[in-house]
Figure (cartoon, helix red, strand yellow):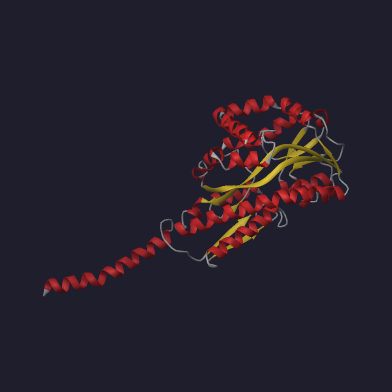
Length: 345
């Protein structure tokens, strides 16, 4: 009789213990199953009309659809949550869930990301994709978790071109004396100095005012950014230098990521990838349209010949050689091998 009562007590208690254990797992996240009610704060530096802004809208749609509306994404544009650096730090501190900065600001944290700042490495977007989506790009994503970040892939900022208020830049000599706003990035700074320009690093949100007030003569950004930021209103000259291809990297707070179930992580990963493909396609179309719109707006646009680009590349070669040693010669060689392979295909 006593044994029977004991078994009954265990039988009654066990489901309750399992239920409590299940609740604990759900709270801690990570290995827990299912989809919970969640709010994801996502911020970028560019405005809503930019292809990156449109890509973020697509990400929001996909996450909310795939989660049945349980996971909600709040989008913030135009650096309302701070610049790339501040938002990345907010992710590390668990104060924000998603941001999609250029890779350049990450160099201070993970030096190897500096390989994407080397001038005149890529001739086409496809060459860049082969590196970003291949072994080199994926190995760099694996370095993020130790810095409290998760990388879900690369979106496209695109080829950077030069605008200024002084004169067309057709040759390497035309850079001399120009005060150009750049990102706070040592490769960019040294490369422009080597070309004879005076680089002036500043936050993206301050650039329009600096151009308008002639604090700087020019800046360099992809066409879609030049158009969406309305630089044509304060910059008469646009030179198609295509000197650097800049990717965006899709970042998630590791603190937030670790709370997600496997199912929720898959929703985030799949949505970032799908929205990224949409964003890349849109970015290329928008760049073509932006160029025509900027011409119509009155900007004087000039091409830069392949021969002149080769001269510029040769001038900045000591800079790339210097930083190849710093970032890892083996990694740089692997990147260039991928580029050569892509050119042959």
